[in-house]
Length: 153
Image 1 (cartoon, rainbow, N blue to C red):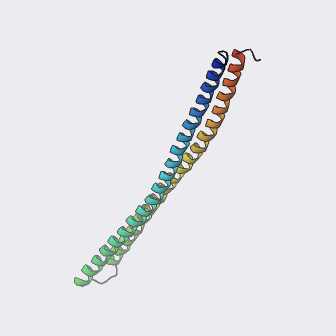
Image 2 (image 1 turned 90 degrees about the vertical axis):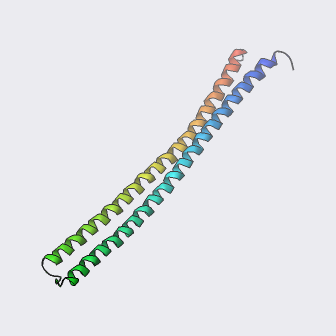
Image 3 (image 1 turned 180 degrees about the vertical axis):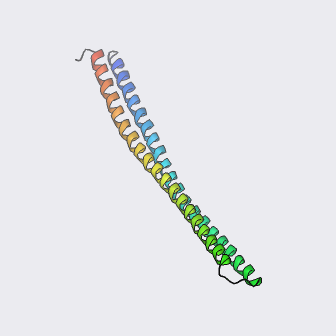
């Protein structure tokens, strides 16, 4: 190899190293975004399960409260008509509203996490495509600069 070829090989090696490092960086970013998407999807499912469990626990608690009300009314000799019935109906209405809010909150959190997962998935694809295009541009630029430096064009 002649001394004149050394700068050419150094320029080619430098361009190749730049292209390689750009590709590796974009792959790492893409992997991180895919991991983030998976994490958000898991969080979405967990939010849904937690809300369902909370709703179930609240329903049990509310049934116990209603049962206690009935028992107290029965023990005191009060019949389930008029004011006691209205109180119990109001308690049931409040219970149903509370359970609805819990379920809606869980569904909202689920949707939020799923949207974040989808966004992370899109960012992963964008990072990968950007890395390919950036590497191509760096390779083309490096090739042009090598040729220009040696008066090849």
